[in-house]
Amino acid sequence: MFTHNPDIMCLQEVDRLEKILPALDSASYSYHYAAGPKKKHGCVIAFKKSAYAQVGDHLVHYDDEFVRDSGEDNARIGASFRTKNIGSIVALQETNRPGHGVVVATTHLFWHPRYTYERARQAGILKRAVLRFRSEKGLDHWPCIISGDFNFAPDDPAYALLVGDKLHPGHDDLIKLSHVVHSTIDPTVIPADSSAVTEEDGDESADADKRITSARCAVASDGLLSSLELQQFYESTGVPLRSAYDEGLRQISDFSSKPTTFGDRLNLAPSRLGAFEPQWTSYTHYWKTVLDYIFIIDPKDTTSSSVVSSVLEPHKTETIAKGLPQLGVCGSDHVSLCAEIIFPQQ
Image (cartoon, rainbow, N blue to C red; front, top):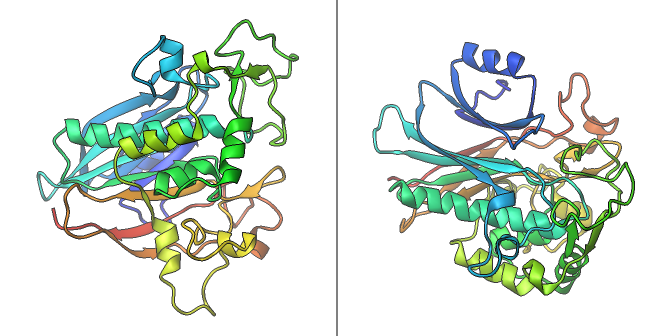
């Protein structure tokens, strides 16, 4: 955790608190821990005591958040699965400059690969919550960082929605295929079998190729947002997000030294946002893909933009080819992302 001496850390799937929290204390970090109800792990935002002090926090329960303004509660929520996932938001004030700081959010979105719609819904809710929190605290002159395990790749509909790209027909197909209502939402749906994913035991240790089970097709009264409504929802929540890695790796002019990117691997047009994300952020037996990001939102009404001055070089495929976690390489099944960001003067 401390190899790169970060000012701020965002950690997901945190358990073993009896080991991690004392380690943070001994390294002079303060921290904020949050978890969903009955979840066995949660999220930590840690920050150097010498640099920041926490002056506010907010917990987002995706299962309870409305995405529509009218209708019955379930329809206003518009969820496809009660996942118990959360977003954690804190306001960090600089210790040597009162009134200046940064809003930081982290999350771990629903893991199941077939629930494209639900992740898009959750990511949009988090973006809305961060900007609403910043505004309500009177901190619109502060930048925001939103980072974590989003459980979707850069070619996913949710990524496009977050960064302000238009959805293409393939995205629309994925959203339609995941327009379902799970038995955790509708108890009249009979679970397929005892091994079906439930809100109590569903986690990403299971086979990532599982199909959708214990669910029915959504109908209009369930309130799930269409692709067009998702775009409108994201547009209504504020400015698009910027990816630190997509911008940081895009700036490398010496192509002989440029790391292989997600776009290189999938032959994406370099102009497409997300093409310069790392080639991998998770590399396991079940999945080998990009799931983790550092996103930036500039202060409101700023005349200049944040600058990504450097990013931690991604691992090469040959280094992680045996799979993660791997002794001497990475202690997690996800690699660390690290960025140095210069924010506009507040």
